[in-house]
Image 1 (cartoon, rainbow, N blue to C red):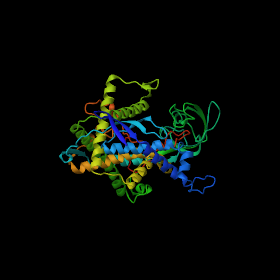
Image 2: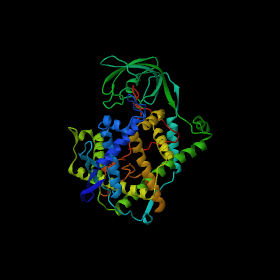
Image 3: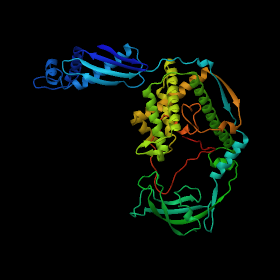
Image 4: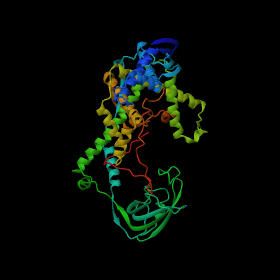
Length: 489
């Protein structure tokens, strides 16, 4: 194999690689010998066909496979010999290749820059922490109580805040056809809860037990079930019962109804869950502080290809979140937004390279157990549909690799935090949760506008395994004792 350097400028390298005809012939013979083990020809037993005969008959046919093997092997050898660490997959252009001739091709590759990671032990970071106080626990308990109120039947017209027990059958107005999920029997619906699509609950206000009500609604244009999105529908509703909500007493009996031993045990569980949420916010703020420090301490050239891919990824995310800014398939941004996008993309690539180098130089690996845990955690986000999530990641290697990225990142971050000097600072809850919304797994570029927060969202892929719901119900939320809703980006 011969390697000639055609270009070496900055992070861009181009090589011309020649693989001699004799080496190509060896690849052909190896491939034919492999096929010859099972190939049948008249007069020969499987595995006994002479190589010369196989080469005569099938030598040209295997050249395509041989080309791929020869290019892959010689490319890797050239990279290793020249100690080149590619930033992205090399671009290959075959110049000459035919039976009995040398293989000549060019390889253009962007290389990772050489840079020295700062002394991680010199990092001095501050971690804001807050404790779950009695007020927060009491507020959470009151919320749990309000979500678990009892009810009694009443003989009057239903009003907002009441529960109506209903049977309903729905159909789309244009074709008078019932779709899956458009009917139910004995359903308990709290009026004013916005559990059903807009307009449904309002039309049942004033109804009484025994009433039959024709409810007409329009499904939102962005409704999850595509076959119903934007369509008008009619629901024939029969009101079986009107029930009035009753107050709940926070006592041991209430706690036992939730599966706990006592009110004290419920309070301890709530306090633990609240503290866990505070701790997650504390870690997020500490992580952002760490990434800001790493960004400040490093300045090196970024491979243009990596930067371009990151910008494309951010553009795609913005296009989804701001469809009104997409014209003729192209995202339209102002000059300031373009500059902001450049800054975010550059920061993410730079920090990603720093974390990758820390992981590589310290041999930080992701174990199978850690990946299994990550998939389980993702599946737990979709109660009742865990099997579908598992299957999604089992059959989608790209999604699994995307899930690996944040796991690796957090492991590297933990490694750095072990080396850094971290001081805890007690703060009030308001200070801890100020600007709590999650920006990016790599934080936000110094000086960038706050509108960049969504644009710089995590590169980790999210599972699309959650099935779409349909029918009148807009959403179903699984509530845990003491659980408070956490913002997710």
